[in-house]
Length: 163
Ligand code: 5GP
Figure 1 (cartoon, protein in one colour):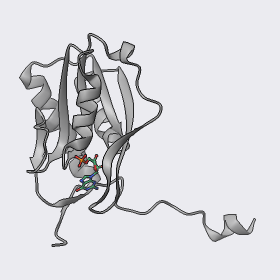
Figure 2 (cartoon, rainbow, N blue to C red):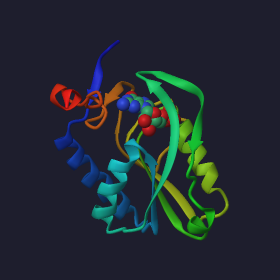
Figure 3 (spheres, rainbow, N blue to C red):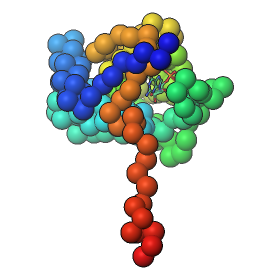
Figure 4 (cartoon, rainbow, N blue to C red):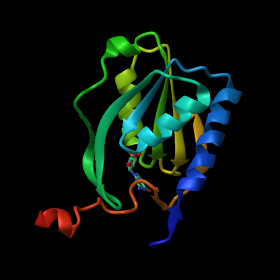
């Protein structure tokens, strides 16, 4: 039950290159990469370099509060991207994982009719996801440990607190 899928920083480097290759091989040339903060920022940055796309946007969506614990619905947090920036563009949405898929569905629906095309790229997709992503590196039913969120936030060390 507590078996995990573990993504190391090193493996993430390979995953990002292989995911970018999938996008390139499909013939899709995105104008904009829309990352879902915070996990999607790492993926979007790596895909931006690998696909030579410099136009990166960020959307903040809050859903999970802990391992397997989530809110009733994903919530968009401000600032919300301006639809004018997205209109008529070919968008590539980048995220770490499609789990229930509710986050990506929200973002896809938000892009709605404004964009020319919207496709999703994720490192992992789980079998239950309601969104079928166009670009997926690996599929797993397990909880994933990502290199950026496995360790707890740093705390100031004692010498700083004493000062
Ligand atoms: P969804 O809306 O698809 O259920 O969840 C999307 C977000 O939930 C992900 O971007 C990620 O932040 C978080 N999440 C979902 N599943 C996992 C997981 O297995 N491991 C980690 N670390 N985060 C997850």
